[in-house]
Length: 391
Image 1 (cartoon, rainbow, N blue to C red):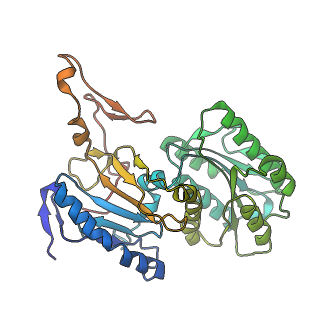
Image 2 (spheres, one colour):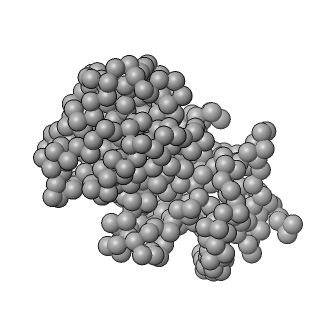
Image 3 (cartoon, rainbow, N blue to C red):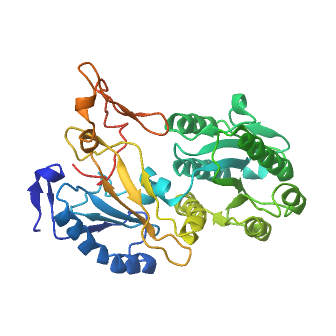
């Protein structure tokens, strides 16, 4: 109702007086945290409307909540897919993750001892895949499976970390299918390797100087491994430990909780495949705390996205920054879309000369704009951005 087609917003019917809230189908939308968040974030509606009145060139404005809901202006009707599902979760999008956390070096340790057979290994693979979803081009990672021995998921990349770009992440996902469970889990050996790997990689000067983490995906730990942490991580605790306990049993939960608390991390237990995504997200809250406490309100530019509401499929970067903070907890990320065409207007063409041209690349070396760039877009491969599931 009150929606009218608007050529400024991709000829979609929009309501310029209201924002709209979307909650992923897999989340309970009556959850008190979501209901309260939707209520207090209504104040953003006036801000969005005022912004648009002051600057009519603005397009989509939005707020992605750490609780999982997404508020977008102007208001637009979200349509579920053919299964009745709206899968879009703003916290999985690069613009959210890049704004919420610092660049990070991450070593993922996966237990492939005999007790991980069957469903546990399936859940472990999905957990690792979800962790990869939360990494972006500013991050570096590697994955090591362990039982009595260490098994780098890609043997050619042992002893180093690689950039978490789409190609590398997809390649590692394929390798996860080759993991199988047998033998005994020697976690002390795996932790030692992970610490040495992070230390050595930092000395190359190639990775992230900001955050370091070890993600531990296992069905238990028989010890707290104080000696390893005392040697490599205390007292500075520069590396955070995030254990994910796979399975319903909690016999080893106390050991893993202690490891997380003693190393400035966070413990979660994952019993079913449905638990995976929400539990993996928890570590982002922890990694965002230092920025919140330091009152950093940085502006972050993400790389160009394809907005799948645009018939011409125009790439656009997204400008995201952090909203007000609350006791060390990130409330979420606010942002607006800026079409690449707007950036091109800033080029001083009179300085280029007859045969000169301007081009732009991102900090990670991707071409943002170039006169000879002809992006090929397929419906299956485009990086769609807000609003997600439109016609």
